[in-house]
Every structure is written in structure tokens, then in C-alpha cells.
Length: 119
Image 1 (cartoon, rainbow, N blue to C red):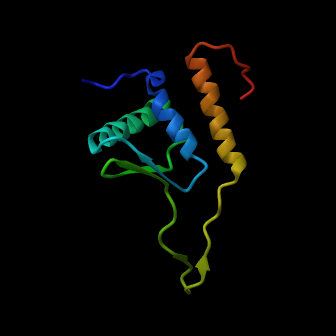
Image 2: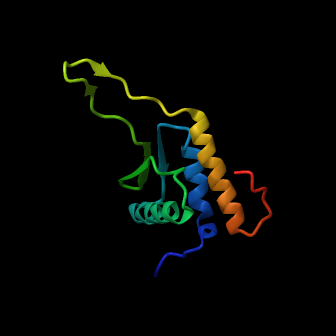
């Protein structure tokens, strides 16, 4: 059976992803591996339907009945041509908040709610 195309059908996914956003790594345990596979599929589909980058840096891996939710992070080392290590720049929290505000604004408009067009 195909997945619903209405983002509101994924409130159960959104609440978990929203709770995981402030953390580097979370584990969501479901009753079975099958349930974990289904939830992860719904989470990826919801992420695509939402039209927002808010969840873009979350990776979802399976470990039996668990879905490991991790933020993408730098694994390698960046250096200049002479071997000097360069630290990656951190994303300012204000930028992340702006993305969340844009998502909320667009979502409210999709729902037909009156919103200020200040964004």
C-alpha cells in the first residue's frame, strides 16, 4: 500500500524527529525490526514531503528493532596543502532557527492558516 502524501499523516514521525533534532544521537526502539523498517521509511518520506531542510542532516540507521537517529558530522580531517589542519566552521544556531521558522511558515500556509508575510 502506498504511503499517504499528506504530511499531517506523519505526526507520529514528526514528533520523534523534532525531539531528536537538538541531540547528536538518539535511539528510537520499536516493537520489531519490521516496525522499525516501516517507521524509517515513513520518516524519509515525511522528510521529503515536508519540503524543508530542517531534518536534512539527520541520518536514520537500523539496528534490529531500533532506529538510530544521528546528525551528520565531519568524519575526515581538512588540511591545507602544507598539512595545517583547518577546523570546519560551525553553523550558527540563528541559521537553524531561520530554517525552522521558514518550515513553520510554509507549513501553516499549506494548511490554509493566516500568517504574516514578513518572512
